[in-house]
Length: 463
Image 1 (cartoon, rainbow, N blue to C red):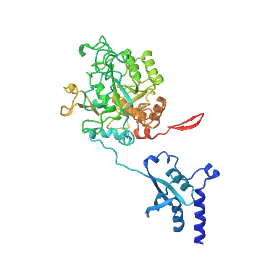
Image 2: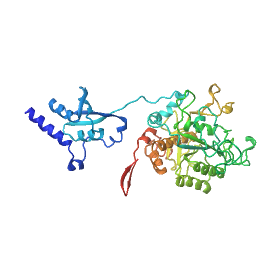
Image 3: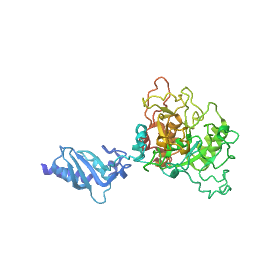
Image 4: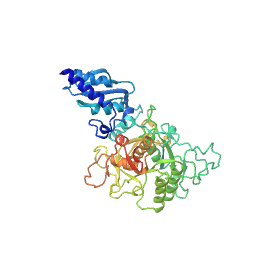
């Protein structure tokens, strides 16, 4: 009788390895749809197979021998580590074994690796908020592609900062500064970005200003350099901090003066410049109470014509009412969560229905110009780093996430990236301020794991 069972089972196994239209059209119990997508994370030629204990030992041996050779066994679990026979792919083996009666499950033997832990000096002070947003887990998947340019529209960026200089954009259309607009983009010698602050608009306390536009993107406030560090400070270099998308490229665009003030005209010019120069993500960590058609048109052009993702801060007034430009629907509006109560609104964070997502916004650590470590910024040990809070810096984390998604899945559209960021956020309680968190707090790893399917004339495609 045992021999008969063995013969019958062998026939069933061999039948499973024979093409069958009927069998191919039906659902495959136990086969995980994402198995093929994860094949790159698995050991090629190996399978973990659990057979129902009720199946006899001979039958198990017959079953296993069809697909390959047993290499090891976890007796307590009844799991066999199977080396697949030559010519049998992992995807095919998963499909076939999952069809067999008596097989509880079949799965790849996945590769594992230690979580990336950077050696940056101040990473310990950053870890609490990066853990909340799943950044370390995201970095195991994607750290940012240098081809992805993130524009920092702000008070400028210290392009010589030791934690930023390797990440700063280099204009391929400009050579050595020679007073000539070699690439014809309207900004002379913009080797590392452009300054659109009009001299007459700058506060007198800022001192003499260069003729606008100018290639002088020096940060005389510190705000822009702080934002830039949150987005893309070089990681694992044994110093300072690590940015959320520390493999991407930073494009400095100065639109704010030393007091952090600017105009909608300058901001609109900066947005258009950034988009033309190839910025795929544009961070706007500033805001105002009044709408501007000019600013909106610039944002629409950046998103719809150039395909950029635009991120903006919701405002720091601690009141209902998201500021502009975050209020525009084309922009990802970002609020800030607290530190002591991570699931609650930071007291200064504005709220309203326009908020899309939130990120930690209290006691963040980032880069500042060394020249400003003179009391204007409190720098530990005189090093060019400091601690600050604000929706500006929460927005920078979302810009970093957008850059990671763009790096990981270049084919995604602006709308799709916006959707993923919202759809994968962790919902938070509204508490006493309805809508303060939008879809919730960003989850970077979850966002990178998302697969979008498109239905088109030619069928269903996957990103």
